[in-house]
Image 1: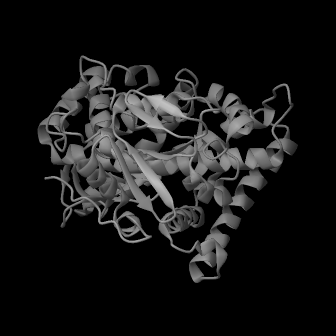
Image 2 (image 1 turned 120 degrees about the horizontal axis):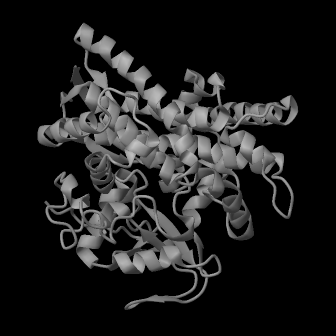
Image 3 (image 1 turned 90 degrees about the vertical axis):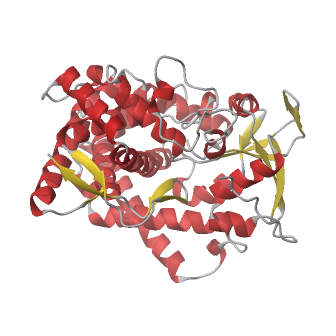
Length: 437
């Protein structure tokens, strides 16, 4: 069923539709206008690009040709000048420091952490199954993503995984989403929500700055990501305390949130498709039997990976990317002047009926035996693609494999699950699953 085009209001443009469901507003805009759709967004003119090659060309363009759009300015009070929000030379330096720590080979060292964390969730779910309780897929996925992120970043810093920090993360995401579509920026006036945001940001800062100071003074030779960043050097020297704070906060908050949503959607989709689930379970049992899987074995789980990728196609956690052109830009038939605000929306690209057969249907075989479609960009494209994508994919494949091997999953959510687009895309309501050994 096609999505209705958003109504454009005087001066406001499509802001009301974007506040309700921005991903659906963009899908409706593309359905109405095609591969180069435009709309008023308050004082801004928005250009939605829908051709996969044009989208990739924009995302691959250099830092002298495009930058992140004004949307990312709203993230800076929380993420500072980390890799997600920094521009130009600051971004190049951050990326050069972080990327070697998260290569496909480097992230293999975190496979045992992923396995151990997933085993803890399996134990919890077995207890729930014994009581006859349903399990919350989003809560379980958040537990895995949070624990893996904390241990990869900070080692055994258990204080980074406590309930207060989990609540702080949810508060910060809600605040960012509120700022995105507000007609008057809530940063500029007092409100209870702003007070909660300040307290949440202070809690995260206290944690991160405390861990940075500990790494710099204790002299321990630990191998977590924070320790590696503290030790990292380039021609300009080491990262400052503020630079470390911004980069670590970005990895801590953005990394766990997107992976958690992706895992929740994947488990829910697998639970709804018994044939795909059976095939997945058989693949895991054939490949690793009852052993704990390794990072190398994860590469052989091709059906499991296809299920994860199909989930990322249907429900990409990062549902849009914003860019602003810094000079005239042309790709194919699209010509943009300098200063154009553009949106590339994986949600739209991944659901185009002219590029995907039955785009709303969960069909993992799309990703078997051939390269993925050029329209598939869940982690972005070009030099600013997601720096943590290899760790995220390893985590998603291993956790999905282990959970489906351990349990038969059945979707028991009492009402339809849809996608809510805040900073990331999340299932709403949280999927409730019956789990049986």
